[in-house]
Length: 161
Image (tube, rainbow, N blue to C red):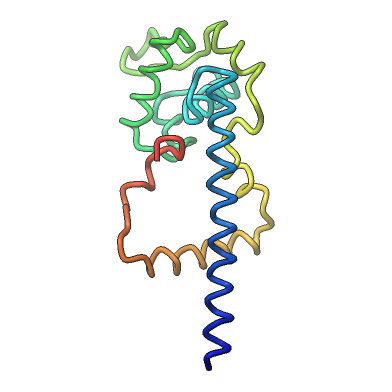
């Protein structure tokens, strides 16, 4: 039984090492984005989504980024302050705001390190379906085992955590 316990302990240590690689890699990618582009990882992802779909609405951007609409609005305020995006209202319905990149925003997109959606979202999207399903199930077990959980983190950009 002691052998099984030692083996279990060693596997837990190896898993922790893998988490450290993930967290460190994500952090380094965010630092590279900040150094090269002067924006956060979340801001770059927002710019990327607007670049792919000019005229995107704020609710559509929030959905693409997996964040609350107020979080997306706060991101947009910072991007607008940096003159990277512009908001346009349609003449028909003034409540509808469409998002577009400025020339300065397009310049950032052209020189931004890839993947612009971030290392972790990109890696997750590229996983085979079965692997992703297993990972999701295992992550649910891990989260349920944690003694303290920040459930509110589900709608925060990784670069803000």
